[in-house]
Image 1 (spheres, helix red, strand yellow):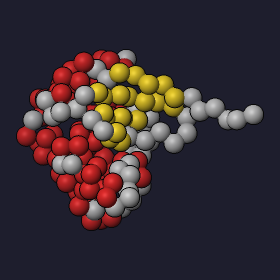
Image 2 (spheres, one colour):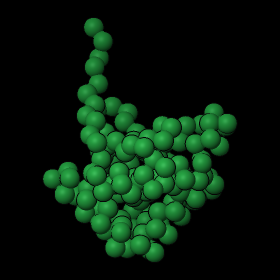
Image 3 (cartoon, helix red, strand yellow):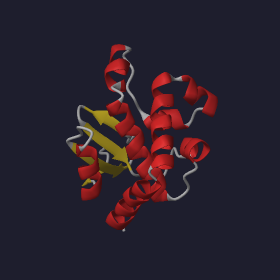
Length: 146
């Protein structure tokens, strides 16, 4: 008998989808489940693990505290990888971009990786330069998941 892993796939809030479409993303999927669920980019789809784990990196680098802020930062982080074409770069190096792996490293280790540093900087800059839009994205996911 094989072990089954439960995975819940949820379409992201409409506001997130509309926002992501501006950057060329076709779909944003939220996932929740047991086992090794990870936030990532697959083609032009963003997949966000909405479990509340692997968040220390967000708190250390981006000063986000609420569950919804963390999930929104994950979304923007993965969007940054897409916009900056990191997936192609990492694929050439035979590495999969996986945010949760990064969050367990020290800040110095995270920022020493060019792709990760650029993605974190994208989120920090976005949060700083567009606080109302950041909060609107946070509010959309808060309302959607509650």
